[in-house]
Image 1 (cartoon, rainbow, N blue to C red):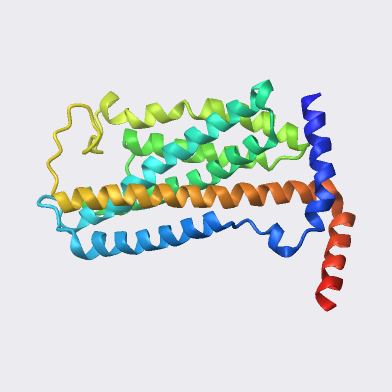
Image 2: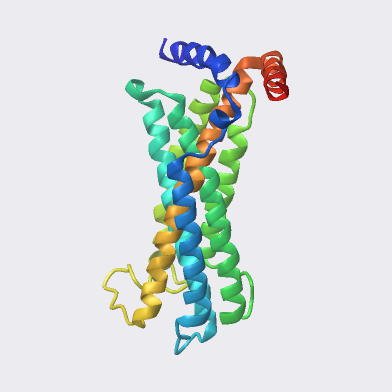
Length: 267
C-alpha cells in the first residue's frame, strides 16, 4: 500500500514537473551554487598548499603530497558507502519508505565509487614510488579493490529492469551487505601483515608526528572533499528524481512537454 501510494504520488506530480519552466527543472539551488563556489575556492587552496607550500616529508620526500588526495578520497568513500547503507535502511523501514531515500543511496554510492577510484589511483602512484610497483596483492589493496568492485556491482544492480520500488528494494539489501566490508578494509593493516602503513593520524595509540602545515593541509583536504561530496550528492539525487519522473510519465508526456516548452520560447 505504501509503495502504491508513493507511485501514484510520483505520477501525479510528473505532469506539473515536466510542464515547469526550465529553471524549475535544474538541479541547482542558491545553496548548492554557494557550496560549489566554496568547494572551488577550497580546492584551489588545497592544490596550492599541497603542491607548493607544505614541506616535503623527511622519509617519503615529495611523494607525501599524494597523501592530500589519497587519504581524503579513502575516508570520503567510506562515508559515502555508509550513507548509502543508512539511506537504504531508511527506505526499507516501513515508516519512511520513500523513494527519496533510495535516490540518496544511489547518488551517494556513485560519488563513493568516484572517491574510491581516486584513492586507488593515488595509492598506486604512491606504491610505484615507495614499493617500486603500481600494484601488489597486499591485504589493504586487495580488500579495497574488492570493495570498489562490490559497489560497481551495486550500481549495476540499480540499472536492472523493473519498477522503481523493485530497484530500491534489491539495491537496499545489497547496500546493507556491502557496507560490512568497510571494517574489514579499514582494519586490514592490523589483522594481517601488510606493506601498507597503519593510520598515521587516527590510528589506535597513534602519536602524530607531522609538520603542522602538513597536518593542516591534510585536514583541509578532508573538509574540501566532504563539501564536494555533499555538493555532488545533492545534484545527483535531484537528477535521479528527474529521471524517475521521466520514466513514470512515459515518452509521450515528455515529448508533449518539450513541444510546449518550445512554443513558449518562440512567443
